[in-house]
Image (tube, rainbow, N blue to C red; front, side):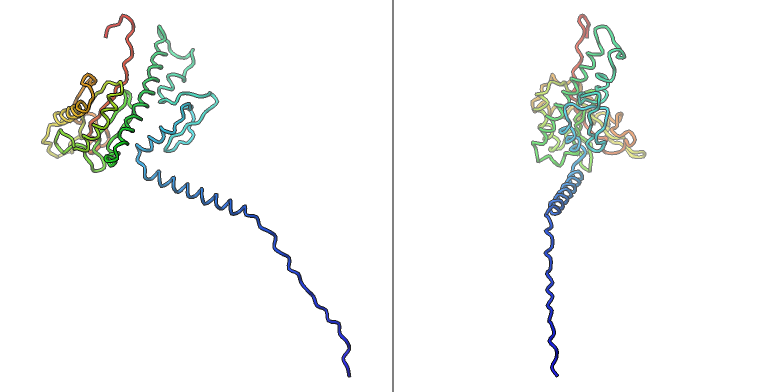
Amino acid sequence: MSKPNQTIIVKKVKKAAHAHHGGAWKIAYADFVTAMMAFFLLMWLISMTTQEQKIGLAEYFAPANVSPSNSGAGGVLMGSALDKAGNRSSLPRDVARGTSGLDDKARPMTAGGASEREASRQAANAQANHSAIASLRQALQAMPDIADLSRNIVIEPTKDGVAVSLVDEYGRAMFPDGQVQPYDRTRRVLEAIAPTMRRLPNQVSISGHTATARPGSVQAIDSWGLTTGRALAVREILSGAGLPNDRFTSVIGRADTEPLLPDNPHLPTNRRVTITLLNAEPPLPPGARP
């Protein structure tokens, strides 16, 4: 018996091609990786720089006209942001308050506008000190052989001017123990900054300081004579490197009477010699005697 004819049905399934995926995600991922690399590089640089270098970077990137009232960052670089009051000079806060913190009615006035003259003098000194600090740091950066002393050289503005301190810190001393003549590396630092100090108009004051002897220890060296001798030795080196003698106003030893760290007067950091570039004296009124 023959089989009936059967219809053979062949079903062909066509697979649809996948939709094309764009490459936007690749660009976004590359941007993310780049940002992470930049972030970790920034963190590494911050961890490797010293406090003095951080301050130098902050001063380098500080804009010329900012408002001292609002903090833009509040972090290491202490950024400032503009506010609705307008642009103000990027000066120390006490100087800025003296020039723009009071209006004309509230500002105390004296004959001849003495308050305005004093504020103008403070602003001029602040700008001059900023320039002096930059010049001194540039002179030291030109000597890579003393880079290991960067933490022992503190350059900072003070109420009297610009202070350059040679500090015993981080296990490294600037003077041999009990001696008035400095190490050769200290002498090279002084000889490096002397030409810059000569170009600046400031008068110079030098003071020597030491740490307080610990209770129970025997102090065999007269601290007054030691600090005075070190201050004199620094003056002689600066003078020999070209700084005129008429630029010095005082050379004094203060022993342990002015510790750098009052809460820890025994620490070696209190041993230092400070060279101060003094602010310009205000002009005398007509007819006044010095």
